Image 1 (cartoon, rainbow, N blue to C red):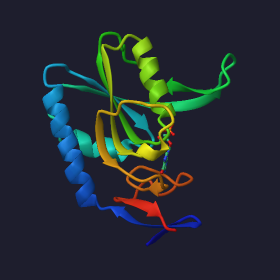
Image 2 (image 1 turned 180 degrees about the vertical axis):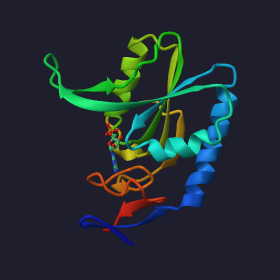
Image 3 (image 1 turned 90 degrees about the horizontal axis):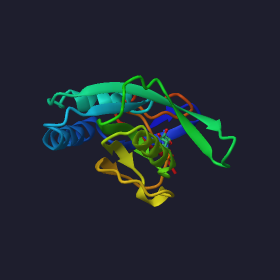
Image 4 (image 1 turned 45 degrees about the horizontal axis):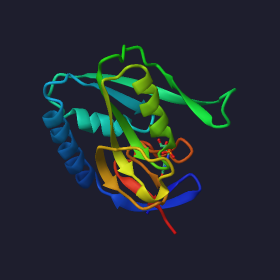
Length: 176
Ligand code: 5GP
C-alpha cells in the first residue's frame, strides 16, 4: 500500500508485467510500421514513462515528437476542445501513432485523432498503455492497448494524482 497526498493506493500492475507487455507492443509496431517511417506523437505528461519504455524496443526508422493538450472553451460549440501544443512537424501524408497513457471516456483521443486527420495524416492509430472500456463515451479505435482495466482511478508509471505519483515504477489503483 502507498499513500499519494491524501489517498491510499494498492499495487495493480508490477514493473515486470508492464515492461513485458510494453515490449510486446513495440514488437507489434515494428512489424506493422517497418516500411512506413511513422511519426510517434507522445502526449505529455502522462505518457512519458510508457514512451520511454516503448521506444527502447522500437527498432524501425521513425520520428518521435511530444505534445501537450490544453483545454479551452470553444466559442462555437458547447464542448471543451483540446488544443495541441508543441506540434511542429508537418503531418500531411504521415503515418501517425499517438502514444497515450490512458483512454478513459475516449473524448480526448477522439478529438486528437480527428484533428490529426484534418491536418492530412495518411493514417492515425492510437497506442495506449491503459484502456477503461466501461468508461467509454466516444468510440475511438485503440489499435495498440497495453492493458484493459476496470473503471477505477489509477496512478503511477506516468499517471498522476493531483500532479504527484508520476514517478512510481508500477501502476497503483485507488484502495476501496
Ligand atoms: P478521456 O478524455 O479519455 O476521458 O481522458 C483521458 C485523460 O484523463 C488521460 O490522458 C488522463 O490524463 C486522465 N485520466 C483518465 N483516467 C485516469 C486515471 O484513472 N488516472 C489518472 N491518473 N488519470 C486518468
